[in-house]
Amino acid sequence: MHGSDTWRCVAVFRHHRQTDDHLDAGTPTPAPANQSATVELPKRAMVLSNDPVTTDPGRSLVRIQLQSHDGSMSEFSQEVASLCQPPPDSPEGQQLLEWRASQHLKHADRMPKIQLPLFAGCVVPLCFDPANPGRLLIDEPALQHQAVHDYLHDQRSQQARQARQAAERAPKALAGPPWNLPVECPNCGARVDQAVATNQADPRCGFCHEPLPVTRMTP
Figure 1 (cartoon, rainbow, N blue to C red):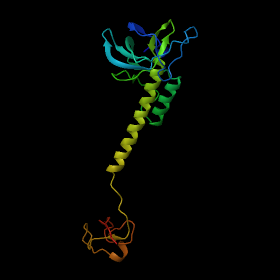
Figure 2 (figure 1 turned 180 degrees about the horizontal axis):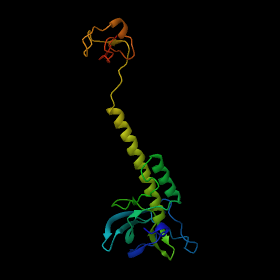
Figure 3 (figure 1 turned 135 degrees about the vertical axis):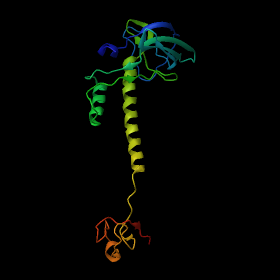
Figure 4 (figure 1 turned 30 degrees about the horizontal axis):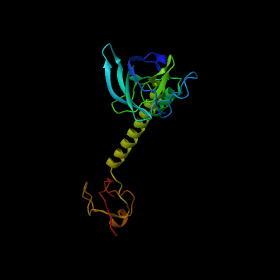
């Protein structure tokens, strides 16, 4: 990643093969003004494979399958960054920093690097290549926005799941008083004043003042 440069829809084509008849796929970047109105984005663009670039482990060669309006299929490959790190002043960057600050994380002001959803089977947004309106690219800004959204959703879901698990593990408070109490204090052996202790919120031995074991008194 190199700052805002990676935030633009820029890519290197290894191979490109597509049909002329395409449908809109989600809400991608619109075609340039000089692009023919009859040329549309494909109905769907799905990742077929994702292979690391040998010379740069931070980038991947992604093979995309396109499904056109008439059902015909085509493919192209594009080299893209595997991770994104939004600029702090971007909307995505601000969302990430706000989340990290709310969690009181150490070094909360550090921007994390997030894996882009480029796994086999993922559907990706597309845009037209500004330098060549006849070609398609993976819409990297839209993909990075999606990655941040998914990351925050996963973090919040994980936090909620951990909170539920902690609540399930926590000892359940007994409903009372009144309580069933032992006849004698298990700590010192003194007799327990049942008439008094059975109705106390926190029954204790009247002699050693240690807490008494209790069980809920059933009706």
